[in-house]
Image (tube, rainbow, N blue to C red):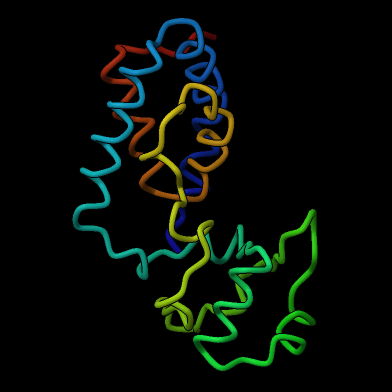
Length: 161
């Protein structure tokens, strides 16, 4: 597991300050563009199987439709699988992800739920309104950590004590 959590903990106060700074100073559309460019830069050559912190820490979340599709595609017993998952607000969740193999490969790579496909959400619009989640994800995903560090440089941000 990539230990971005330990590195990030030293920057947590700074990241929360940067979040506030962006809320007050950043233009929404410009920030979305910057996030997307940095997302593409870091994910261009990244092999997520070297990390999988998201699978280990956040786990998996899927709705009923996605659960049905996974069971159908992989010929899994839905009722048996439901016993491995918890139901929460209409979603089926588990942490760590029960589909993660010891070698960090994914058992359901061909039929991922949206939460897996879209994580860490750094290429989506409205990043200005999701900065709290971004700061939290910077301790899980090395890409998010690097995006925040690059944005701090772009905005010439300096931590205040």
